[in-house]
Length: 77
Image: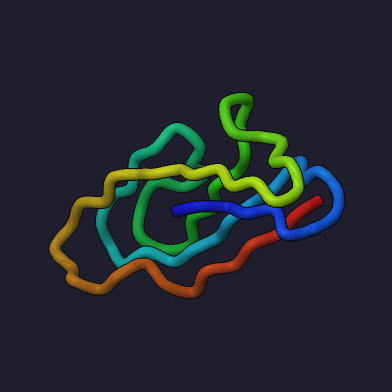
């Protein structure tokens, strides 16, 4: 997934929320690691984001569901 700063100022302190079906999610910036609400936050490696720039993050999800992550939300400071 990617986070893009379409604003005029630096985006520092971003979060992305998503909902996972039951299973497990692993990644360096996750707050929760099982099905349900997961919040990904910026880290030293990918924040802040300059105007017009993009940063990306990834994770590995395992489980028996074929339902893709959903209910995406994005927030800045």
